[in-house]
Length: 345
Image (cartoon, rainbow, N blue to C red):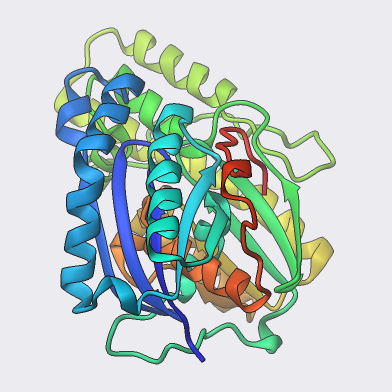
């Protein structure tokens, strides 16, 4: 049996509702707030909460419409309860609780990072509801990289998930966004930086490789950001080509830092596959680096098939919820489900 799960994600500034059947995505609706927050250069929490309140019901209705389903065909309701922006999370949680009560359906609480972990295995509506995860892919290493997280995760199987590395300060996506802000590129900065980098020389400027002296798998990007600021100040006046070269060089430095610890983890844990998830995974240059590395090292490489699955979305929450549904991992007492903004994997 492949349950039909309606999932909700309001972890930051996107309101998303999806309907999945097993690993098959029947609909994945994302109402973006980017235009609203762009003029502020970042997410304004109270404004995000108000927009979530305004958008969540229309997004829910649109998800049902696109999936060609009625409410009574839903088997369970799933919702992100952390990590994320506290006052944004609570909008989705309350909506999910009310909907589960109204429809008399089980409620599933999902860790947002588990969504990113499984995002590579979501299938489109014309594909099989079976997950593509194979026993031969374990052990696996997952690199989850976004604006708020840079995590290295070891999976011995679907039941054994261990975070073996994380950022000790800025995350990789956050670092790219902040550097883009220093260059006055606008919001969100990382995708703009990626586009400019295509016309730049990645060897033009040299940046340090952080955390090489540590014996763990943790990341640090704050020093890299500081080095980027100093390089900009040193140039004094920026030309169009300077900006492209800075974008290419800095982006390459971030990717080298990500790969350095990943390769170290591969050497120790000897995985059969590499999984990629999170907003930074949408970067084509980094994906090419990782794909080449996996091919040369005989590792299976998995990343989100649909670009919507790279960023925050509810379909990936639905896939994580599917695995929890199989174990009957439901919330017995709805009032007990509360937001956990700093929830760890």
